Length: 320
Image (cartoon, rainbow, N blue to C red; front, top):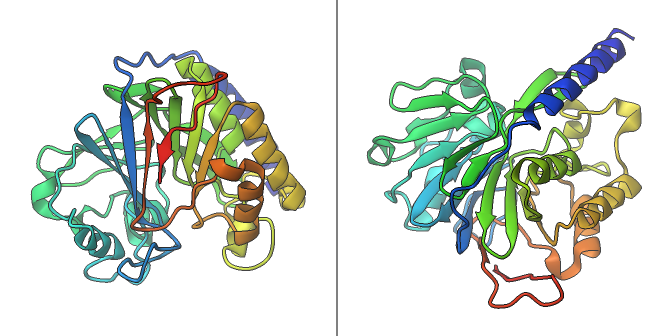
């Protein structure tokens, strides 16, 4: 009973925060011709060269700038970590990074439980030469001796064409309050590509919010959606990291409704991470989105680019 009362009070507080953040518009100073998202760490891999784990890390490249989105999990504290091994396999270990974007301070996104507890991202798994002058953007206060860590307090353009939603609140029924930010990329002729770590605030709500603050259509959603419909792998996450009470969690019909709501909002492509989506949920998303469904596997890359032409107000120009 106390958990329910806490949850209801927290939900009321989150609604006030959403309303306040929604009054801060993001005016992109550029619309980019293309954005590339390389999946560095995820649950499945493109081939045996790439390590897999229940964590997330993507390399987002646009207009000559590169942003590392999250840092994976590395639960076994391997040296080198799965992230570094996969960077080496792709020949990207020494590639320049302009910024590091932390979606939220959970162990599978900041590089491990110890890093989550200490509020410090696991930057030691990266080539030190790539960290010179790099800024870390996070939705909560983090610190690291090598890099400047900036808390993003509101919707903000981070560099031309790339923005943060700011810290979107979510109250997880058992753990408590969480703040998560999503990365928004404005692509000319398509709209916004929304990149999410776990989607704890609710992916439908996140898409609505992104449309509200940018004034643009959300063309694609990439990353974690936290949709677990059945028993199996990740089943504990359905309860431990859910923003709904246990009796209100979405099952198969709920996942289908979420997918249909995304389409109704104008989302044309979805690339969901298997790190927090069960296989049945992935199958439902693929069924609903059809050709607009993109599989996420470590080592693969997806590109969203300005369409050569837009027919009947609809474009699906992407390469993956």
